[in-house]
Image (tube, rainbow over all chains, first blue to last red; front, side):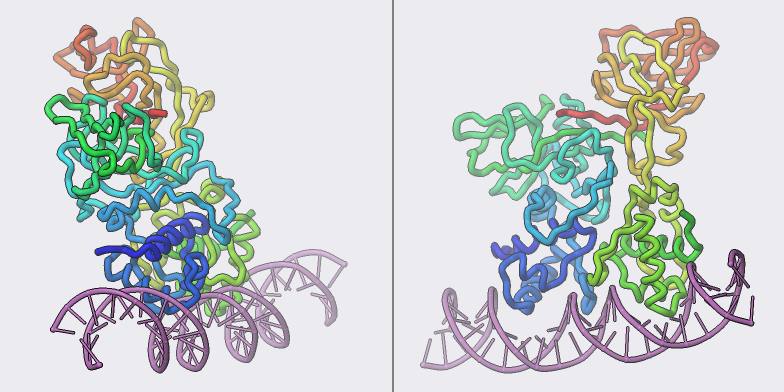
Length: 232
Length: 232
DNA sequence: AGTATACAAGAACATCTGTGCGGTGTCAAG
DNA sequence: CTTGACACCGCACAGATGTTCTTGTATACT
């Protein structure tokens, strides 16, 4: 499955629009935002996206579409979309009288061996955390992942914890990040170090090896800003 | 501000519909679900709700409405809307709710040497956490404390973490609790073990000693149900 | 060349959907 | 009794919106 630039743009716009308006855009709005003059072309691409199960659509229903965050996470797109900056016009002004906000829980991330992100049964597409705004800045850039594995145990991040990440492409050395490894199609949770043109991904567990990769093969998907653990 | 039964039903239906579909219902769908035959009546009541700022509406936009959960919470309606199924037209039901609540952060608790803490005065709480109800049951019993010290570090609870506790007098052996030590007027965070008529309070850090006390001198103030850490 | 496939445009079409307006019944105030 | 606000109903209508049909342009493969 390969997405065209246009389709990615559509996904980004939908994500952004929904976040700003609390309801999805119309075909024509998508077209306008993505520079597509014809409604049929939008539908054409929407159908593609639906075939890939990246979105869900209710036929003949106005604004009857929603993103499938589980799948998006699976193909490594969710992180980009979740932190999408709200730039475009038309997207909403919400009164922002909210003093709390929602953070999408996108799925699982490997803290042990990098694993294919599986978004099978455990994860319901719309799981959200509600957080107090005072604790975070720029909540729109946040998303959450459930930790799978124990490789970050020495950093006091345990299997099953929820990590909250801020979407960003760059990280300082030593920060805990979600890193996407290109040729392995995997996202993993590690300490990040840029050393020349190499990236070192360090687990916080002596029984796991460090990973050394060409910087070009690693993209930072976000930085961990919070850890939440449920004990009961 | 007083809402009619019909308006409450409409709110409940909207909440439920959005939960199940990820997009809002149309005026006609609301009407059908709430036993309103006329679209204008729906609009009539919708306008009322918007005047009270319980919902937000974009005029001339299909499905252009959204609930203002902040306000709903404010007027104490959020709880009612959470699980209330609307009998008529079934939208997807979904156990999860949008309910959230506040947990008072009461102060500091010692994870090293015991220090004094006040656990009764909710109103002087210097800070509140906003949490999603889906994560917890019986939120009224919850409160939070900031951890001071590193004696629980082996349990992955660090200095500065916030622990959320459920208020309860009893604990199972091994659970992490906030324990009040009578003759010292102190509360401390420890693993709890009842051994005969003695209580053993075990830190999760080899450099701190266990405490052995008469059961009569120790009262459990609550059990840790969650740990939250801010990294930035 | 011939054919199949992916992508795109534009216009016509069929619904969907919010709005507006006239009308009904109730109820309390004048 | 009359008046007026309030809650409600039906219905017509315009504008919003998804779908479909036809046409055109590339590209890859036979």
